[in-house]
Length: 134
Image (cartoon, rainbow, N blue to C red):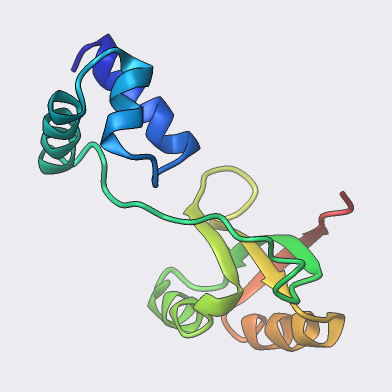
């Protein structure tokens, strides 16, 4: 991987829908040469997927929360099954060190929905809640 590949990756992070011609112009290559490099980056697993960014508030998710999860048992499988069943609320899910076992970045339509989630979560783990203000 060279500097040109890193420039390509940086441009794709900004706009994954960019045409190969325009991307090539930005990194000083032809569209065909750029396309070959992008394909190689995909085959190597460097570029894993292309995604979109959404405005969660416009989608009705007004509550943005970080939840530090402290599991009650050494067997985390029930907790992980619980989380998998509630993917619509999970933005990111990390296994962490420090004060907890997992960190959830999550979104909810209402405080009632958040409360229902936390009550159900409490069957598998304790938690610390932080709400995003801005």
